[in-house]
Image (cartoon, rainbow, N blue to C red; front, top):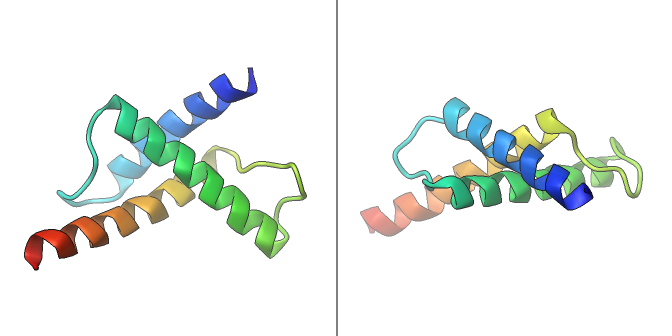
Length: 86
């Protein structure tokens, strides 16, 4: 059940990140949106544990996953934008 919950939270976080972050260099599609959110959740969990916000074994919630997905989306846009302009 934990994996299904992570995928569901990841998808919602990915959709929210795409709505919040403007730009044309964003991944599209259900699978990429879900992967974006899941990676964002892992980024938020890692940073949260490193900063002491979360204890070991505690994961980021929806807000943390959304913030992590926004960070991943901004990095994605910078990498893809640089590749297209260069």
